[in-house]
Image (cartoon, rainbow, N blue to C red; front, side):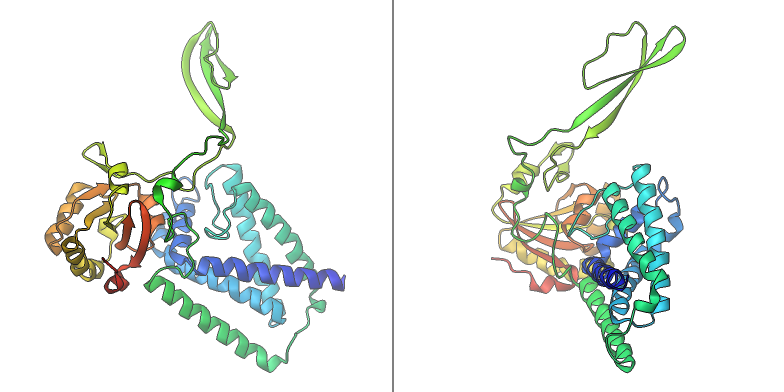
Length: 365
């Protein structure tokens, strides 16, 4: 049993530190995932949405700290109780998400290791078993250093987590795990391989047959049923290949400008997924860089999911004269974790991404 407890202690501790770190690297992205869970139709607790970012930072730092204290053997009773309560909550959450198909990616490991809802649930079940082993065998969790040194190690790690969180919030994630990382070509990322696996769907056709509802399931063909058609519902049986970038498009006035812009030699994209939520200081910070890029011959465009009224307001207040294109809000959030943010492209290849705090570092040729 002692060996099993030792294995569980190391495995759970390292996993919690890793899981916490990859989310601490991108707390804004994790906050988007929390907002998804809090929204109506999932957990239906929208009053927590405004504090999602603060909760994200608290949760991921707690995750790292619990992993550290478990490995150290420091405050073992508090640590195992906290681990047990945390894993109980997340096991419920991942089961609810998987069973009711509410959230397609739990965000357990950020964008570093995407997991399906059921994979997340099974992972939490395994962790629950290991944490229960630790919970009922606390006597085998012995400190690895002298007790006096533990508090200093925990303090240093905590301060390090706070400093790292501040750094990535004020700038951008230190490690970019997303498909829109610097060096990626957006056009290439949207391509489907010739031998790509196709998704398999069940089509559930509903008919009125003699006053009774009848459902006939096929995998595409319209069924031969002697009755009145009511509706058809589509169900994914087997997932197909999805390209890394599948939701990027630039629309204006009902026209698609995606291919045209991605083939332009020099583009500066000013991204702001929601103009009403964008940071006012950000627009003042990037105004001069926009003008400089225009003088250097860049095609400067705005990306937003906001409507024309919000766009006009931003242009009038800050004197920014650039055309805005409609893009999917989730895609804009994924491209750069800043609202507003700056992205330079050369024929669709991402050359630089900047938080508005770093606008002065923009390199324009």
